[in-house]
Length: 402
Ligand SMILES: [Zn+2]
Image (cartoon, rainbow, N blue to C red):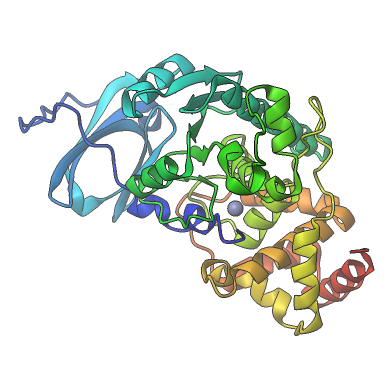
């Protein structure tokens, strides 16, 4: 469970496939005259035709960046495409102004893309495309909206004003694990069957399935028809880690869409993952607020305590400097627990510095790459001496009652 986001936050966007052109034509693309308006190139729609794995594809969107090796384009649904310069056949800047798609446009496209039987439920920030009951889609969107509200309020109270998402946030809710895993595979996300939800940096969508169908949360004869019945089923202890995963993945989506983090920028995984775990605690009992944020996460604390017993003084430093432990399935569970502990500690004991550090990270450029020295330097600039902080961190964490 702890490596669930590994696939979504590594280089997955790079290997993700690009949507094929419908009604693909082999006719040459005509060059339009160069842009003579006063518009910045980044505000205009670019059309890129390229060849990957033998097939010719076309995407249209705004240009996020262009380097000697790569070009990054964002389509009007918020998806991001990284295309190698060597793959490009034609790149045309149109005089059309880029604008995000509306929820209605996204809904129409999702219905055409997903298998028959899927429907749409739209709320103020989300377009939920579901193959479940309508009630389950309502339960999901209510969870997501409450999380969104709690997340933005939480950071605004801490001096970080987030903005509204530029694109409608898409959640795909599959009827069962089988169809969900099949879709994950088609999307290029190699997730194990234990992973009940994931966020794709490439498509900007959260994927999940109907958790009331999971064996562990079902008891013989129970009904899952009404909102109340769904809430009851998903409040049992066996369901908590499952719902937590959904909340965790949705937290990534909000963070990347509301200005807290920038997709494709080099944000340390200890921060990105540890913070998502801080928000993990689902608060199903409350229909309005969200009281779980920042509570002690006991399953993570248990793992962290074990790690603490064999803690070496350089451990914090190596955690700050490298993402590797998060990407290796042998060390990921420990890395996630340590990351939760560090974020929990920093938010509790160094809240102002933590917010300032987040603001600094939010300015990081896309596709930039910081070395370990730079990461350590920035951490030091924000929180002071690492060794000293490490001692206090271990001391304070040891005081928490398990
Ligand atoms: Zn994650």
